[in-house]
Amino acid sequence: MSGVCIVGIGIHPFGRHDGVSGLEMGVAAVRDALTDADVAWPDMQFAYGGSDAAGNADTMVSRLGLTGLQFINVKNGCATGGSALFAATSAIQAGAYDLGMVVGFDKHPRGAFDPQPADWGLPDWYGATGLMLTTQFFALKLRRYMDRFGVSASTLGRVAEKSYRNAQFAEHAWRRQPLGLHEILAAPMVADPLTKYMFCSPAEGAVALVLASEARARALGGPLIHIRAAAVRSRPPRSFEVFSPMLEIDCGASATRLASQGAYELAGVGPEDIDVAQLQDTEAGAEVMHLAENGFCRDGEQEEWIAEGRTELNGRLPVNTDGGCIACGEPIGASGLRQVFENVVQLRGAGGARQVTGRPRTAYSHVYGAPGVSAVTILAR
Amino acid sequence: METASPSPNRRPVAPGLFTEEDAPSLIGGRSRADGRLVFPCPTGSAGADYEPVTLGRRGRLWSYTVQRFRPKSPPYAGPVTFEPYAVGYVELPGEIIVEARLAGVRFEELRIGLPLQLRIEPFAEDPDGTLVMTYAFAPSMEDLP
Image (cartoon, rainbow over all chains, first blue to last red; front, side):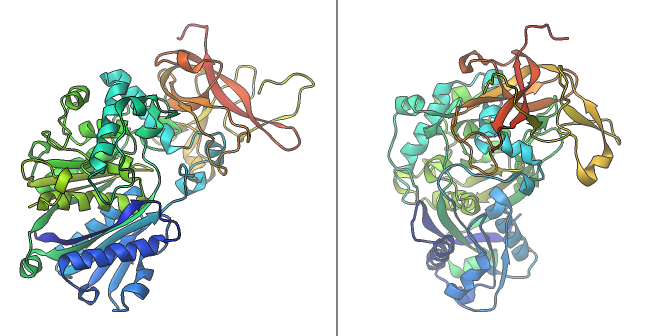
């Protein structure tokens, strides 16, 4: 997938912003991205955008300008940003446009998500009896994985410790206070074996990206950041996904594996070619398991990887360099685009104190969510 | 939630979820197309594609966690006064793995492979005192098949 570049990035800080709507955060991120690309809203030929719970993206035109552009709303759970990015990339590749906007934003109430069974094709009793929680899913998947592949609780703690450590250098992150390993491990359990500091929280924030054809990007000047792949996949047979009242005994496939393989094929690279990665870390164990599901290591090698610091900023494969979901929180519609934002920062060499070593050339991002959807993007400079 | 006599009225949390015998079973569905088992048995328009079948009553713990905070209502319909409860996946040999509440076991005794048996127990109470029954798995003294 060549010929499409990211020429501008904008972000509204993640966290809690009482009195500021999700749409207002989206508008702020769009303006930030326009400034970064040195273009103006009337230059935008099209936009794809969305949120999961904070309103219709296209209503932003009343703030940004009634230019009459094609603005398509996207709502695809955790893959909202990835889906918008895929659609925008495809539109430019098809030759329909050469300059446009992708925006994702969200604003969730405090506390865990409260999905309603009917919205997910599930019977009411599943929610009524207290089985329908994303936190349970991640804990159940992780407990089995830890038992089978020998991952320790201290490895989970080290992953979360890295998240808060990296986030202190990321202005857009929410939880920027470093936490010690003991504090993380000794905190109250949310869903065993995961403590409260190992989980991300629903949050607020917005991200916008300006995309251009390669020719237009060259005319605009600035570093060329190419979108080599944008893949979105739903769940295959025998997978183990969020909100599953049952599993098949030989389960093991996943939407993540499909999206990952699809993206590597599109980009013509393999996991060994990736220099920096942002992986879905709904909780610390998700980052651990997703290292393997995205092809970066074999199942069970994570214990050694984390102990040796291979996912640290100066490691062989830095992971979640801005603190990921654990430190940024998860505004569903913005979360995947935050990963892409961070990858552009790293590829530009603009990460400051969180810049990974060795001037990365390739960057990978991955989201995962209910009911078994995953989006992967690969960027290169 | 254990109650003494006089024995109050009881109702299942949903029809068609489990058999209400002394030795209860979960009701799954067998695909008429390919014989594959699912749980719960689909209802509505999808129900025509499945034949209801009773699933095995015993299995082994496949994975587990503890729900430490009260889920939001709706959809949660448990008591307002919250007590943490254990949740797991239970492998029914030769069938499928089902998600369930776990009962009759201390949290620190949970381990993968633990032999378990199905039971029906109350998880909530209607305003008129009727007990709302759901299924759970508890440690089993009997040998697995």
